[in-house]
Image 1: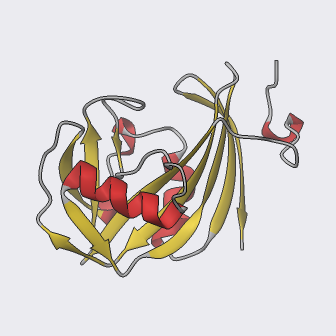
Image 2 (image 1 turned 135 degrees about the horizontal axis):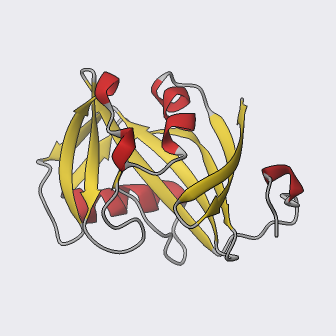
Length: 163
């Protein structure tokens, strides 16, 4: 069994899922959501999900935000990439985006409950274990590429590169 990120052949790595995350950041606050179902149920995260056929990561991130929180993000910028390998064989390549604004009003859906948080009071204890390792880079506008090894919900190893 692989126990470290550097034991994975990332050049040949082929993720099972390509997905996105979107974070609206305004006035010292960030819009998160409490996930009600699906992968990551019960955790706090940003809106996002799997790419659909023919969709770009940016299109996916906007669509997922519309579906999960009933808003359309504006002022969108690429923030970084997340590469997750799970010990059970599952893998995800995530594209992370930030937005400076949005149209509409955040609303609860079947998938999520919107949650505004102060940037200096992020609820990391209710988030994925990797989030504290890359959130600071995203919040400071540094583009990152991070690789993680997980066993279920538990992070075993991480490597983060900054552009």
